[in-house]
Length: 236
Image 1 (tube, rainbow, N blue to C red):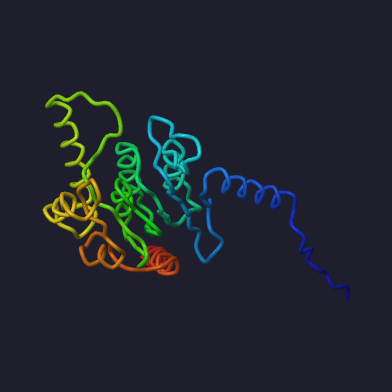
Image 2: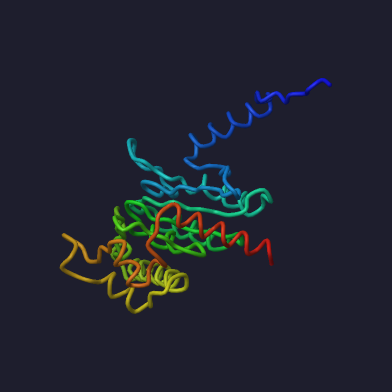
């Protein structure tokens, strides 16, 4: 009886798919879908969150116009079962960051965020936008009022615009975490901790104690949460 062996070499289609996924990862810093027990899309938010104006050369940036279609694709693609957002950001454009946070919070598939290094400024709404948030003990988060690095008109309307934007950020954080709005504002307006500024720097454990982040954890913890949620949905 003749034995039949399966050719283990990859097909041209498989090679082309791997090439496309590698190019996608290099271009966007994200992974289309992981190859574990479940298909997880890994989205990274690193450096400066770039908005309507291009950042200077030499800066690491996350372009919000690149992230928006990724989030739409994640929600629409039936092959993707969950979303993992990894953050190490200094903040950036307030409107762009808040827009991305709103989109992430609207993803109906299981989602988690993991703060590594830093989740500062407008990175805070992003950090709390998923269904579960994680932070490593060595990460930090800087809470401070809305600032503008440029020429502004010194009129009451300008100040009111900043106040309204700050209220939107505070409201979003309060709705998507366990910290109260009053406590978040207190940390935001704290004096004596930041040089030439007001605000507070929280370490990983402090962020969890304040209720800003759900729990301390690493990559494995975030993936375990997503796997559990996906499997619960499948059983349901």
